[in-house]
Length: 346
Image (cartoon, rainbow, N blue to C red; front, side, top):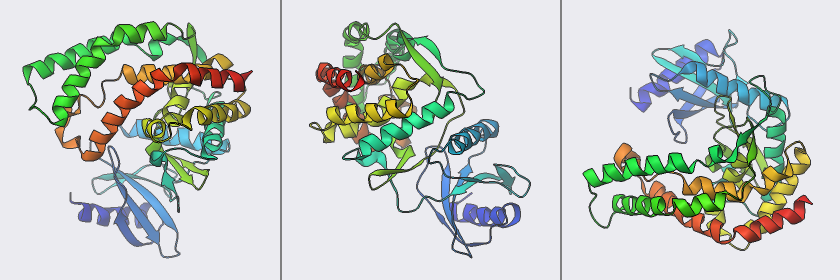
């Protein structure tokens, strides 16, 4: 179905199942696995519509929407879900399934990086989010082995598999694919050193229900405030330290603000702790080491030229190189970052 034809189906679904009279439906920002639309109704209200491709597990998408609703009920800035006339969070008609949420106006993603008061705002928001989700019915927080958060053994296997695939299909010299193959080789060779550095982590970290995909495209900012947290994943337990580090130590932030990210990280951790004092200080101290270890153990996006060549865009290439470069910066500055965290967590 073309985007134009799909937009017409979206308009029909809004009118029939949501009692929204659309004045206009236009294509919105691209999603990772969805096609998104912006709808404006005749009263001037604006709505964000996510259209799911065929084969999507809609039960899991409903669970993700419900997780966001739980966070919103606890006071986290999450766009409200618009339910259908029968109370459903996802509607299906005309061969299309959609969900509808409030449109967040005048906001930008965090892909531009954190600066100024955004450090505290993001730390406080993630702290409130984790505090709210700690009581989720899926289960309370529990300790998990640090080696499971940054799994060097698993990374070794995945990198060996990737290197075998590159050996079977050598990429042309000089391009992004060749860089991916060489970087995978260097990353595999560095794993023993990574394992040694990760031995300084606590034996266990705290795992709990988290957002699940709290990357910079899923955090909307308005000035120095958090406008919204979007695109939750179905509830599952992961390291709280990993999720905090993923957003506050985004590679683009680390590289663009070399003189700011360490004090910024400390301010974010202080704001997080004030909002969520239940998370042990040891977890917060582990944030930069977990972030560096996780990046060092990652195969993404080095596998994309093989797995999904169509996904390789200039933006993805730039992000891949930034991830690799930021990993080195994090390792290089790890002692300084941990000392700054010790000062704020005393």
